[in-house]
Length: 207
Figure 1 (tube, rainbow, N blue to C red):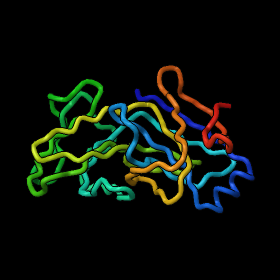
Figure 2 (cartoon, rainbow, N blue to C red):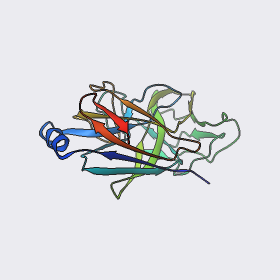
Figure 3 (cartoon, one colour):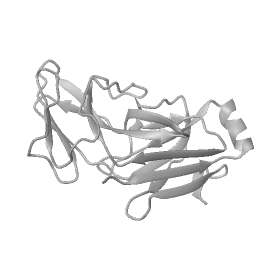
Figure 4 (cartoon, one colour):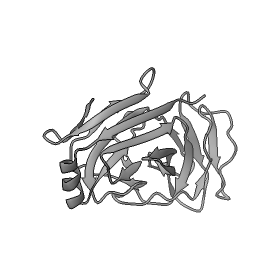
């Protein structure tokens, strides 16, 4: 059974006014393999009280999008959610993703790129969420280039990064972060975190 997580984020009216004037959004991202995130999983206009909830279930997607800042990560082939961890999927020459087979890595999602019509494919994980009561299905949480005949091994974490930034959209590549990121560690007994934005530090503080 997958875990359910919830993040609450509070803003004052004054903070919301400044955020709206600068066309800034709340950005939520997740790392893979312990590295800093390179994809905006969620980007939304905040209200006073905001809630993000999700389950720890993932899918694997394949795209031809370049891993450049702002690139939209369109899923051209995908496994559906939930994909099986500890198994190996294959992107076949037809463009379909095969059923999972043995050969994966522990606690990870693996995909072998056998699609010969492209020298390079972008591969990553995607995950559903609910933002302020609206279901957001299938946004990517990671993206990496995978050469033909190579295998992508993707290890998700329950950690979140949250920050404010303008000109960022959900489900796009982010290569430059322009404000402080707040690291929030979910997992184990920590399934619900409440925060409030602090203007002076530019971070989200526990409440």
